[in-house]
Image (cartoon, rainbow, N blue to C red; front, side, top):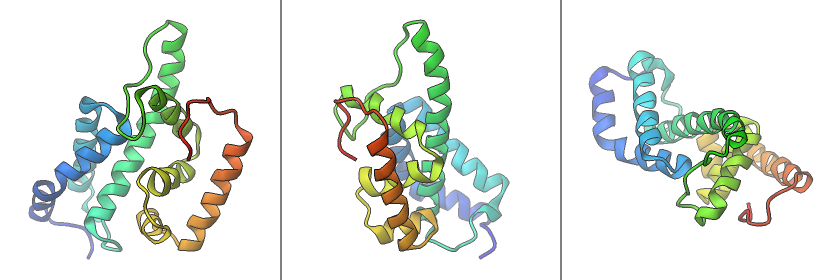
Length: 168
């Protein structure tokens, strides 16, 4: 399937917008930013319908696109938060994955990882997807997910983590 028609995209919006929005809110902890990501993801489909090549289910593609958009925002927020921290401003709102006091640490950790590692951390550890589900969401093999998880564990063993960080 080489892309989606405008009607298919409109149907997808009606059917999946709530799932995309919920995913973005869970990752970002901010309703306004989640709404922006929702619009970005569907605008991408409208402007470049061939982005969805039909190699996975549409919902899987939407989750992947939403995750990547949110991780990019978290990385950008990290840069902004470093500036904000110098001026004593609050960093990030709490998350539904963990206690509010842990949310900032989780987002900082995700923002510091390269995209593939951050995505596998979200899919496998936070979403509790299986290796197969994570592989489908990432568009790679189960073996690649296992290698990424091993790399993530190795990375986490080398970085200083706040004591209030939930176990990943």
